[in-house]
Image 1: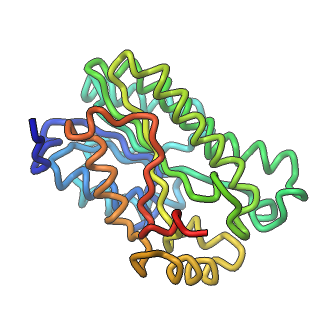
Image 2 (image 1 turned 30 degrees about the horizontal axis):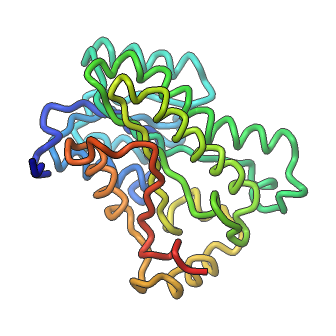
Amino acid sequence: MIARLDRTLEGRKGLVVGIANAQSIAYGCARAFRALGAELAVTFLNDKARPHVEPLAEELQAPIFLPCDVQDEAQVDALSAALRERWGRLDFALHAVAFAPKPDLQARLTDSSREGFLTAMDISCHSFIRLARRAEPLMTDGGTLLTLSFAGAERVVRNYDLMGPVKAALECAVRYLAYELGPKGIRVNAISPGTIHTRAASGLKDFDTMFLEEQRKAPLGRLAEIDDVGAMAAFLTTPAARAITGMIIYVDGGYHIMG
């Protein structure tokens, strides 16, 4: 059977965590989900972020729009309760959250603080595990969990430093979650884009230099844009991807194959 993608998410319910503004990868993914017919729940980090995210949630016609600081258990519980009350189920969820304190992000891994490392690991990795735990009982007919990684998880990328080990842990978590949740029909995958101009990425030291170097090396002569990542994310939630789980899928113009 060959699955067609047109409107294949009609009637599906999805959660998008991590939209910060219109340049966010999460927003590109949300647009793609919506284009295939999905109904979305959208979160925002805090009151400072809300004005940037709320117009996007309105554009996406999201019936659920709630705060979600992944370190605030009460907020995450409230979000889970809202999903259950409104929909009674969840078909897919995108985790697009990563953070490290700026002094640690811009320092050598060797010089990273214990507090900074633990914060980065908690927000960027363990929060995905916590999301999976809450999504599991809502995915009564199976489902899809997605997160975002980066090539620095697999090999050294100059100036990625602290986030390399953190993303490596996230990729390992994807594999174990895929194994544990597979019997329930829940698929777990990560998308690894190349460097993209987002607010989070701009915090990396010498970001513009990194971007130009990767673009020059990429076989396609270009790196991914948020809509490229969105197209892959949407595909992975459809029946066409029903046999794909535990994967780290690169969407980076081929940059990851270069030495």
